[in-house]
Structure formats: C-alpha cells, structure tokens
Amino acid sequence: MTELLFNKRLQVQVKNKDTDERRSVIRISIELQSTSNPVHRKDLVVRLTDDTDLYFLYNLVISEEDFQSLKVQQGLLIDFTSFPQKFIDLLEQCISEQNKESPRFLLQLTSASSAFDHSPSNLNIVETNAFKHLTHLSLKLLPGSDTDVKKYLATRLSTVKEEKQQLEQKLRKTEEDLTRQLNYAQQTLSEKSRELDKLRSEWTSQTTSLSSRHMQDLTAEREQALETQARLQQQNEQLRQELESAHNKSTQQFQSKVLELETTNRELIDKKYKSDSTIRDLKAKLASLEEECQRSKQQVLSLRRENSALDTECHERERLVNQLQTRVAVLEQEIKDKDQLVSRTKEVLEATQQQKNSVEGNVESKQLQINKLEVTVKSLSEELIKANGIIKKLQGDLKALVGKIKVKNTVTVSQEKVLQETTEKLQRGQQELQETQQRLRQKEEEATKLKEQLEATVQKLDESREVLRTNENVITWLNKQLNENQLSRKQEALGMFETPAAGLRTQSHNLVQFNPKSSIEVGSVCPNPQPTQPSNKENGESVGLDSKYFERRDDSIPLRGLLPSMHLNREVPKPLNTAGVKQTPSATSAYFPG
Image (tube, rainbow, N blue to C red):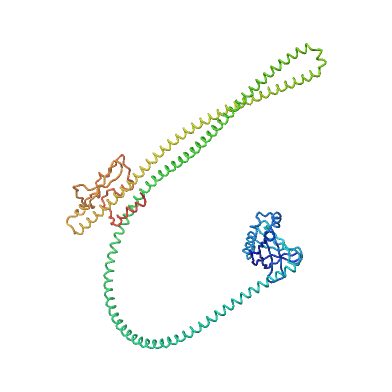
C-alpha cells in the first residue's frame, strides 16, 4: 500500500562538475510504502522528476535500517516516523523562500560528473545565514534504470489517460449544461425583445403627451413669474426706503453711544492700572509663600530618603545578626562533637595506659626470668631478639597514639579560640544594631518634627489665601461704593433726584472689619445704618469706609497692595462698571488657586 505525502514542483540549484550553476524546476514526490508480507515494514520513497524531460528520474528508497545509518551520519535527532513530516516542512520552507532575491532555504542538486547521466547525485537542503551555509539534510539519490524509467513512464501514461478521461467527462457535462443554458437564454431574449418593443411604443406616446402638458405649464408659470417680479420690485423699493431711514437713525444713536463708551473706556483703563498694581503686590506675596512651601516639601523628601536608607541599613544589620546567630549555633554543635571526640580519645588513652602498665609488668617478670635463665637465654637469643622487636613496635604505637592525642588537643584549643572570636563579633554586631536603632529613632523624631513644621506652614498658607480672598471681597465692596457715589453725584448734577444720598443709603450692605486672627471679613449691615453723604471736591469729605476699620493691629498681616487703593483722597476715584466688578473674582482665583 502506497500513501502519497508530497508532490509539488520546486526551484532547485543544479550543480555539475564542469558547468555553471543553474536553476531548474523539478517535481519532488514523497511516498510511504508499507508491506505486510512476509514482514511488516515501511519504506520512504523520494522521487525527483522533470515535467519537461520525461527521462529525468532519480529515486531513493529509505527503510528503517537505512534511516538509522543516515541518522548517525548526519546527526539527526528525530525517529523514522516523524522524519517524513520534518522533511516535508523543510521543503515547504524552501517553497516559501524560493521567490525572494536572497532566499534563506535552498534546494541543491549536485553531481560529481559533468552531466546527469548515470551517476548518483546529492539533494541538499541548505540554510544560509550571515556566517555559513548550513546543510540540514543531504540525501544521495540514484538515477533510474531503464526498467525504472519504463515503469515511471507507464505510470505517468496511465495517470494521464485517467486525467484525460476525467476531463472528457467534464467537457461533455459542461457542453450539455452550456447548450441548455443557451437555449434558455435565447427564449428569454426573444421574450424580453417583445417586451422592449411594447415599452418603446408606450414611451413615445407618453413623451408626446408630457411635452404638450409641459409647454402649457411653462407658459402659465412665466406669466405668474412676471407678475410676482413686478410685485416684489415694488415691495423692495418700499423696504429700501424704510431701511435707509432706520439706518440713519441707528447711526446717529450709535455715534452718541460710541462717544459715551469712549469716556467710560478711559475711566476703566485708569482703574485697571490701579488694580494691576495691587495684583502685582499680592502676586509677590504669594510667590514668597509658595517658595517657603517648596522648601519645606524638599526637606520632607530628603528626610524620607534618609529614612529609607536607614531602613535598608537596619535590614542589612538584622540579616548579619541572623547569619552570625546561625554560625554560632553551628560552631556550638561542632564544639559538642569535638567534646565527644575528646572524651572518646581519653577513654582510648586510658585503655592504652592500662595496656602499657600490663606490658611493663610483663617486662619486669620477663627480666626476672631472664636473670634466672641466663643460660637458656643464650640458646634462645633469637627468640629474645624477636621479643625485643615486638616491644619496640608496641612502644612506637604508643608514641604515635600520644602524638595523635596532642594534635587533637591543639585542634580543640584552636576551635575554642575561634568560638571566642565569633562570640566577640556577635557582641559587637549587637552593639552596632542597638546604635543604629537609636539613630533610627532619632531620625523618626526629626521627621515627625519636620512634618509638624510642614503642617504649620500649610496652615499659614491657607490663612494667607483666606486673607487674599477677603481682600478681594473688600476691593469689590469698595468698587461698588465708589460706583454708587459716582452715580449719586451724576444724579445730583442732572437734577433728577432731590435727595442724592438716598441711593447710597439703600446700597451700603457691607462693612469691613479686621478680626484678631489677621483676616478681613465682610459682615452684614448694622440694624440702623447711618446714611453716607456723597463726596466731592468742594466739601472735602472722604469716600468709602471710616478710618477706624483700617487701624493697624500687631498680629495682622500687612496689606501692601490694598492700602494704596484704600487711601482716602480729596478726589473721588473714577468708577468701575459692573462688568469689571464681576470679573475680579475669576481673575484673582486664577492667581490664587484653592
């Protein structure tokens, strides 16, 4: 059973021994053949053909055993079952890159001979990068023999015949469908042509009737248009005369208004210059307060940075203390182990001492026996020499044990010194930790003090803003009073009113008073207000509030820009219109936010 996995045409770089490189389009087909008799096995068949040259045929059959050797030779990391899909993926990448000027993946077909005759060729899949040409896979293909070419041509012929039969069947079906459609279209065309003739005849009759009607309507409309044109001309003449008379009247009125507005404009410009001077003074005061606030904010930020640095130092010291504590615990455990080892060595030393004592007792007994048996010693001198060798050996072992014990004692002494040093370091670290904690507490206290100072400065700033607001209210009140005085003065000059002070009596609704907290408040009117007399140059009376409301207090904030405008002169200041009074709060709120 054969399964076709891939069958497409690809651009391949063809290289021969003596000829230059060239590109040609070659069809690559991949089939998977599986056989079950006598043994179940699978073979991968790779075939290279050329649609223009039917005798161009290269085959490669890869069995599972052949794939193992190929895997070892080329360092592949996949098994036989996943190899076909990976091979097809590489070919698809070559197809996607083949139309580019510098493709990344290339297919190369190389041959050692001068022409593709009967020598084997290599199919290489090469990836080009900035460093080198990397060959992912290289397959050695064999040219097809005469029998293979005949089989291939026979299969191609059979497939072409099948395709021809299928195309002939499709052609017959399409011819039948087209003849059927043509007959139907001819029938519908004849029907539509008849309908078109009918519609043309109807359309001609309708157009003649409509043209006659249209001519009649057009003549009637022309007569009506002439009549309406004459009537409209008469109406236009009347309207033009009326508008000319109204325009002359309005121009005269506007000229009188322009003169009045020019006078008021000059007065407003003078008043504007005075208010600008007061605003400049208030701006300077606000700028100084904002600078103080900015300095306090910078101090708070620096203290926060110092506080964070101290926090990090404290965390590092705590981590050091924890490390030293763990190290001390480890050293204590080692000391316990060393104590156990020393006790064991002491027990071994006592056992060796007992053995030494017993050996010395044996030596003394043997010395007595030697004195008694001097005669036998001569005959047994060799045995005695051996005994002396054994004794020397035992003495050497004893000396070695004593040396080991001394070494162990020195080790324990050095470990005790290390333990003392670590305990001293730990005590020093604890002292440093206590000192840093004290410093941290001091810094926290300083930070709280600075916060309190900042809150105090913010409160002062709010109070100064409230003072500015009350100053604005005082300015607006004074402008109202001046406008009312000027109006009453004009009324007295024109003789329109008998009592010039009546307007001022009804308009004075606010009085200014300074509270002990150095802020200006506008209060309500007294239950029995006194009438205010208009001021002029002849009688020399003052304008606005009484001088007792502007007395200097010790705890009050000086009003630098406000006092010149509140100074009482003999001349009456020029009035502000109501539009200027309404705009002052919005302008001052732009300079004093919040």
